[in-house]
Image (cartoon, rainbow, N blue to C red; front, side, top):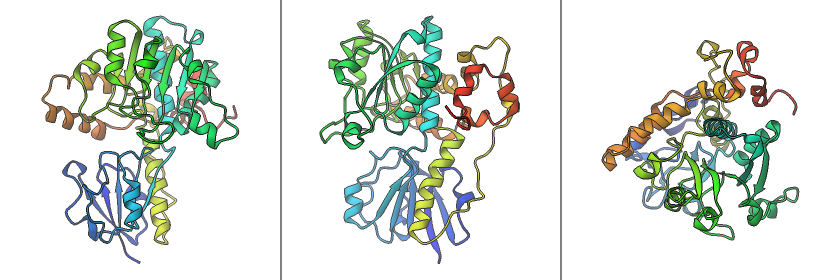
Length: 375
């Protein structure tokens, strides 16, 4: 059979994974959905493309919409169900990348502040795929943590969530929840003044903008109640608040989960489901581009923190985002989106560790990212 697929031009590895029966059309998401989108059989998007009755008033020939992302708050799933359009996304695809991002920024902050991270307790808010990846690394590094996820406790009899009163006793909070406004445990402004007034050394948000109330966070930072904050996500992105970004310890454009390996997994997961829906199979020979060890930045004097910092792109992203402060709203938003989409992707540390050159030169602690070894 012939299958017509329209895909966001920034989705990675689609061509490599497609069988010959599929015909691919690429579109620029900054222009919105193509005018003839309803003529296609399937659509592949990212979080920058919302799917609602307003953005897609007619579904036409579309039978499948897939988002190569972990989050789904840009999708009106009830609407797609009403239209008999199958939907899928790539849950867990970026968990390793987000976990590595959190550990990288956490250690950089501790080094800069001259704080012994082993003396601090980290509160994990949201213990799904990404939160669990952070927990896994904290365990391997021997860092104390408190795990908070009441909804997971309800659906998973093997998980026990900390209470909110125990959570707010932590020194650091890192957020890994979806953005929801309804249900028993809505996450919109979950981290509000009520929590922040208890005082924290550091707040990290690498989940969704709006889970942390940015204005309350900035107010508590200004008053010295919150020591520092690191934001990878923003309430109105691709627009962001200048004063909030300017005073962040680090500010990045929603790229915590961006890596060569995460992007490949994202496409592979959702594209496999798309093809299965039409009775086809992906090209299993396709693999993510391997890490090139000639790109390793190394010195005998590097600490674990410095080794991660020099071989990640957090500093670049944060520096470039700071340059956008003060730009007119539209220009800033476009530049934010470009910074996200057009920057060459980093490799995950776990992929780097497949190189003997890295294993020989990296500090001993770096081996915590090696998923091939038993814990």
